[in-house]
Length: 176
Image (cartoon, rainbow, N blue to C red; front, side, top):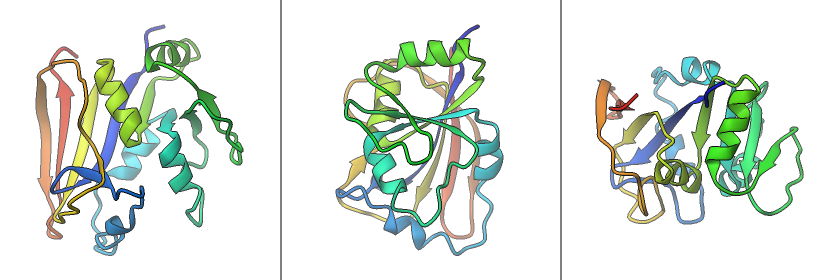
């Protein structure tokens, strides 16, 4: 079986950050009261597994509820984790993990966390990205993009603007 589709679904500030320098996401909450449907639930339901970075896991573990119920979660880390919700771990490049997941029948992976997303882009493994830009400047933080990437062209396949000021675009790699 071939590797699964690798998808990114992320919010970023107008200046390109996905979290504050301390990895906090509190700034997202100011836009969470709008009642707007940004399409996250259908996206989430279409994914068989979540591959996430260690720093993102640490933030998520502070949430009141585990947001990834019913999903297989693989954490990219070289350190042991508590496995509170049955998380698995992976160390090293993403390509071998994705090959294994594909062989196990995983069809679509939700790639989350700044370093993990950047790693997927550096390995040329990301197939599509839905990026929601929020109308806020953070000035510093965890960037969505940066570091080495495989030079690729991307095609905008959909875009939406919301009354709250959020702008969402979905991009696919041209070679897919």
